[in-house]
Every structure is written in C-alpha cells, then in structure tokens.
Amino acid sequence: MANHKSAEKRIRQTATRTATNRKRTSIIRTTLKKVEAAIASGDKAAAQAALKEAQPTLMSGVSKGVVKLGTASRKMSRLSSRIKKLAA
Image 1 (tube, one colour):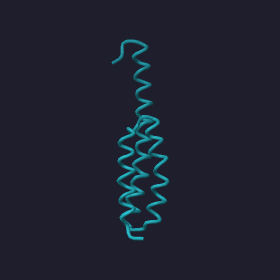
Image 2 (cartoon, rainbow, N blue to C red):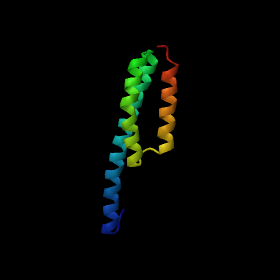
Image 3 (cartoon, rainbow, N blue to C red):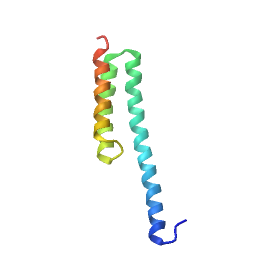
Image 4 (cartoon, rainbow, N blue to C red):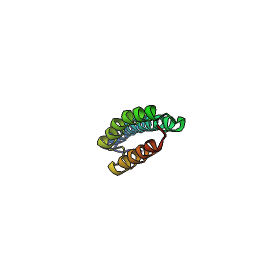
C-alpha cells in the first residue's frame, strides 16, 4: 500500500488511465471484428465500408499510445489485402 500522498495519487492516475486504455482497446477490437465479419460474409462493399470506418479508430489508438504505429499499419495492410482478394 502507498505510504505517501504522491504514491496514492499515482495509484489513482494509473487506475484511471488503465480504464481509459482498456476502453480504447475495446473500441478498436470491436471495429476490427466488424471488418472481419464483413470479410467472412464475402460482401466486398460492406468490408470496404467497415475498413474505412475502422481506420480512423485504429489511428486514433496510435495517437493515444494504445497501439503502436507498425501494429496498426500491419493490421490495416492485412485486412485491405484480404478485402482485395474477395470476389467483386
């Protein structure tokens, strides 16, 4: 347990930031799952729309420090290549 006021404050800040980061991560995962579902259904137009919606969410996570830039770029690249392979 914390023995100083500053340590108690750090505990409070950490709890708040952890909750915020978990929320952001959850939002990112949800949008990516929507893209995955659209790809699985085979609907290219829906998959492209879902990807277009997921991109700003993912990049927002990068700017907030929840996801690294390389990770986000890799996910976007792999999803877009899977969408391109779908039959029109």
